[in-house]
Every structure is written in structure tokens, then in C-alpha cells.
Image 1 (tube, rainbow, N blue to C red):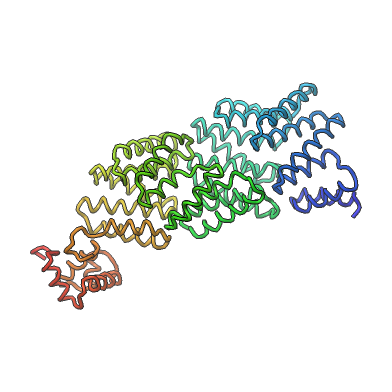
Image 2: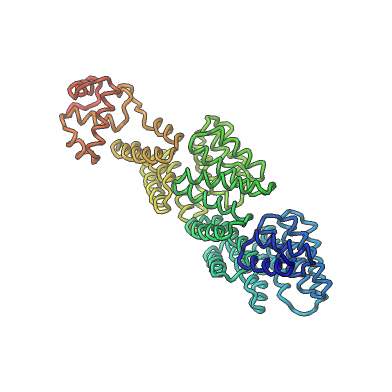
Length: 548
């Protein structure tokens, strides 16, 4: 193919986002003739979207030099800015600072106002944001936005507006922040922004949504990201992040098998090319799913791998230690995490886990402190997920404090919130706690209804550890019950009163089929063969009162 044809095809492939073809065709053109600076930039961004970051940096450096040779100083400064972005996100701080200094010097020599100064401000804003100075970052993002507007540069306007949104969220101004994130995403989905930046904005916006536990918004933009990735099969950098985000949503909604598949695919995506730190998030999510389904050996390996790739394995690893019966290790790990983890994306998760672990370890005072902090966070952030987690934690602590009436109010509120979020596992956990509160209030019939509803959900999910925990909760404390559950004892009393299965179903508010199953279980557990024998057993073991 003649070089001119390859070049034209490469440019066309770049415009239609066929990154693999663009790479092959632009490289073919480069073999026969030197690429101009603009085409070097096209090839650089193509390499970036194919996951070849090293080649991307080399090409940008060549484009930078070519622009300088042509006297296009503003464009040369822009290439230097891209190289600074690239270096900072790789953790090469000194190299990044060098490119920033060069870009500044070039723009000062350029003299005229240009849009590149806005990109440089945007980079400075990002550095302030990641350094923890949200107010400074916000001010710089605002200035960058104004420059983008002045020059009509949609890429810069979108990048900087989304940056303002992230900074406002950090400044506890979430409503204003998410409004700007949504505005940025409208520009993204409308196709107003260059492909080179779309994935970065998607991932940052979704991260911002998770930061304030706005899971509905996170789900909406994750779906949009998945569609964008699917439209570009050759795309590499964002496919793994998309899979992790999707897996998180699937886990929340109880689709654990699908979540496991997505997390495994994300792990594979992040493994090629190797060295991607984001792989830690995929391993951590796998650890969570293995822990919830009772595969403790696999869970431990996944959590450790997450830690090796830069993702703290807590609170999951501490929860795993508790599930394995090692309370000492669990409490030690969660206490350390409470001291170390301040990032509010993860702090609520640590607090929720701390309540569960400390209650299991009978450290009521520490559980109360964690629950109070979690509740305090809801005053500053209107997020249903956070409110549900806080209500669940508060209810469990109140129950441990011997206040079942107050606990029941909190737990029912948690259950309603989990239901609204379509979070079946969390809703089932709240139903177990509701059952315990009802039982403490002397209402075993309602308690058994709650336990049975939770049991069905745990069975559907494959949550074996929770099923085992529920069995412990519902095991009769009276040895005379012969291993019967509270509901089975209740049915036995009804049998002793001479009631038919239909009448028992009506009185207890359950189906006749469920009653028949309970009757069968009673006969099997007690070694009985008739209702008369069951009645005699109930009286002999004082499972009915004298007025029955």
C-alpha cells in the first residue's frame, strides 16, 4: 500500500475509533515517510488507547520536538503537558515536573494567550486535588474552565467542569458537585469530547459517585461506560475498570455469579499489559465474593493479592478472619484499619465491618463508637446506601445493648432502604437482625417469618456462611424441643391444639404447603409417625401450656 494511502486510511480509522487499524495503518505510513507532528500525536493517542503507554510517551516526545522544529510553540507546549499527565499518573513525579516546567517556559516565550494555558491549569488543579487541597483544586479548575470557554475548547471545558465537580464533593458540596459531573457526562455521551479523554472522565465520574455512595448514579454511568467500551473492541485501558464497576453493581444487586465472571475478566484485563495497579481492585472484589460464598481459602488468596497490588485488603480480610473464627486477628486488623483508613470512599465500609466484628467479639463499647461515627456521616451526605448501613449498624448495637424496641425501628428502616436499593443480601441480613429483635420482644412467630425470608434469600445467593449463622441464631435453646426450629415448635403447638394444616396456615399467615413441610420436618426430627404422637410429645415435653 502506498504511504499516502496508508496515511489517509490511518487518519480515517482514528476518526472512527478503530484503534487497531489506525495503529497498523499509521505505522505502515511511517515506514515509508516521516509522520508530521499531528500524525505523531494521533499515533501516540492510539497507542494509549491500545494500552501501550511506553510507545505513547515516545511518540508524544517526538511530536513535541517536531512542533518546536516547525515553530508551533503552543502545540509543542500541549504535547509537553500530555507528557506531564502521562508521567504523573505513572508516578514519575520528577519527570512530570520537568515537563511542566518546560511547558511553562514555552508558553511564557509564546507570549500570546492560548488554550494550552488552560490545560496547564487543569494539570495543576489535578495535582492539588490528589495532594488533598480540594479548595485550591476547585479554584484552578474554575480558571481552566473559563479559558476553555473563551477558546471554545470542549475537551478542556469538560475536563475542568468534571474536575470542579470532584473538588466540590471533597469540599462537602455534593449536590453542586454531582450537578457538574452530570453536565460533563452529557458532553461525553453527546460525543463532544475527544476519545483520548472520554474514558478518563467516565472512570473519574464513577469514582466520584462511589465516593458519596450515590450508587444509582454510579450504575447509570457504568452502563454508559460499558456501552462506550463495547463500541471500541480494541480499547484496552478502560475495559478492566468498566468490568470492576459492573461487578460491584452486580454484587450489590445479588447477581453474584455474574459479578464473579466480571471480576475475573477484569483481573485478566489488568494483567495485560502487566503492572497495572488497578488490578488490586479486581482481586479485592473477588475476595469479597469468595468470602460471602464461603470459599475462605480462595478469599484469603484474593485479599492478599489485592494487598500486593496496592489495594488495602481491609475490611474484607478482617471480616474473613472473623468468619474463620479468629476473633483476635479480626479485632486487631479492624482496629488498625480504623486508625489508618480516612478516605471516605472506604471509611464507611470499615466502620460497618467494625460494628459486626466488635459485636461478635463482645466489645460493645467499640461497636457503639463505630456505629455513632457511621450515623454522623449520614448528616453530611444524603446517600441511601450510607443511611441503610448506618441504620443497620445502629440497630444491631441497640439490640446488643438490650433495647430491642429501639433496635427494631432502626432495622426496619435499614431493610426498607436496602430494598429500595435492590440490595437483597444486605436486606436479608437486616431481616435476620429484625427477627432477633422480635424474638427478644417475645414475638417468636414474627421472628421466624423474618428468619425464613432471610434463609430463602441466602439460599438463592449461595451465602453459605450466613445460612450457617442463621442456623445458630434459630437453634432452640430448650433441649426438650428436640432440634426443632422456633417455627416448627409453633406448628407443633397448633397440632397439639387439634388444628388441621389449613387452619394452621390461616392462623399463622403462611401457606398450607409450608405447614406441610414443617409437619414433615417435625415428624422426621422427633421420630414420630402421626399427629396423635406429635400431640403427646408436645404435652410430655411441656411445649404447650395448660390452656392449649
